[in-house]
Amino acid sequence: MSNAAKATLSTAWDLTHNITDTATATTTTTPTALSVAAAPLVTTAATTAPPGGVIDAASTKFVYAVEGTSGLTANTAITSLTEAGGTAGDAVKFTLGGTGASSFTVTTTNSVGTLSTGSAGAAGATNGKAYALTVTCTDTVTGQASPAISTEVVVGSSGADTVSVATLVGASGTSATWAFIYGLGGGDKINATGMTGKLFFMGGGGADTLTGGSGVNTYVYGNVNESTASAMDIITNFAASKDHIDLTGIGTSALTFAGTLASTVKTLAANSIGVQASGGNTFVYVNNTGASEAITAANLKIELQGSVAIGVANITHN
Image 1 (cartoon, rainbow, N blue to C red):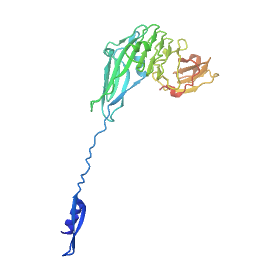
Image 2 (image 1 turned 45 degrees about the vertical axis):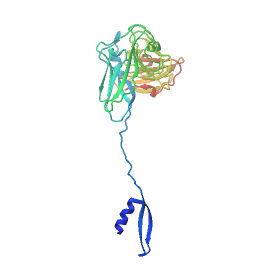
Image 3 (image 1 turned 60 degrees about the vertical axis):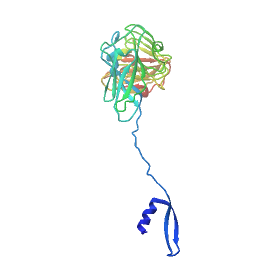
Image 4 (image 1 turned 90 degrees about the vertical axis):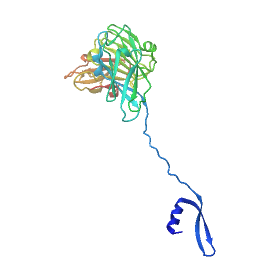
């Protein structure tokens, strides 16, 4: 057997023994077992995951426009929606369900959804009317969908309402439901005790008393007229560790957070936000004009009951 043949054979067999021909004194190598070493089969599968849920992004640029006298204005955006989790790079679409869906619409553009009122708007009611909705996010490539996410839109009236959010939502949702709460006109009392989901409060005009839930609460102001020195909103349980005040809809110029003002400070700089303690409570002041003004004449004034260590992280603004 040639050396080349032996080399070839030795690569195909892994167990050998030597046989010696005593007459010729030559030795040959003979295979005794065959070892088949198959190459591993490698498959590459795309990593896919269904959308995990929906992220809402309420903004004051929507809020003031949607508030009507006795309900929500027709064909007006409430919030934008984006996917949580899912497969990176895949396009998604959003769909709307729930018993209140006929009063709202969802559209999707470039994988961003917009929840809007429908062609007839959404009527309010004395002490609040709840619209139960669900939003589902579907991956258009894989067809996989998120769980239906419950949300509620609560709409008051033009009068002074007493709104128990947990009671209204409890008829169709759970305490963990996210909710958009519109007080509209009048001095409303909106109480979300018992709610644990993400809540957005839009008290509207009048001196409102607002009580948040145990989850994240965002108090949204689309106009300085919604809380003034003469008709001031009171937030009873603002938690600096998690709650927010959204002022992005106020003014055409960027606002500057001036921080906590000493009790001796009597004026507020142009286009600025200041916080000041007085009488055991905490006050947020906004001057959205181009000149400094007396704190007592601030364009927007909100009372936070108690001593609250509110900082720049708690206030969203332009």
